[in-house]
Length: 212
Image (cartoon, rainbow, N blue to C red; front, side, top):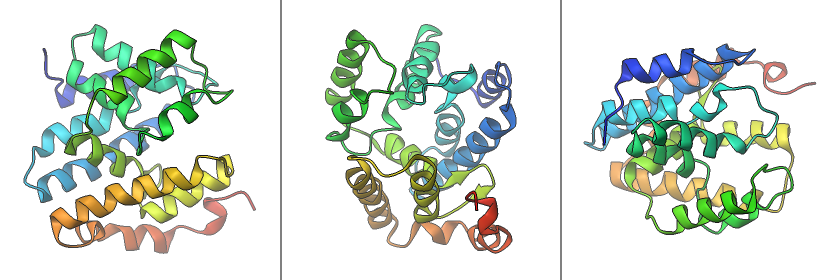
């Protein structure tokens, strides 16, 4: 099994067919920054977390209208190149609670075949999320295209963009449970490590967050 380098991860991100590549790059880099800093605070491998943050959405490197499709496309892309450890986070980063898996995957717009759904459910259910999975899940909910923000602000943006569904509450509780678990290990708020959040909030107008 190979380990993906930061340089190679950046190369994968830059080699894509997206019209709006800038948005994917900004989000991925901010997620990587958050993941690295949290991992360092926890005494884990910050560079490993940075790479995982960079490539968690690599399945979006090609234009698609199906939002959830990217988790399996990213997994297959990295797995087929021999990056099994990194491929894992492409699947795990979207499921904060295993109770969400079936509901999300059987959603009409998820874009998966039945065999693909069975594979993802089996993959997720056979694995316990490790701290790197959880760090990337939290980082994904803090790293935006306009900088690093609170989980509350990021989730509100998502709700305003996508609306409220039957999985919204479970999803919110799931990510907050992960944040709580990490904060208990840190013995302080995760935001303590991110003083730039205040600056990002101060310089962001509400019209830049939602369509008025």
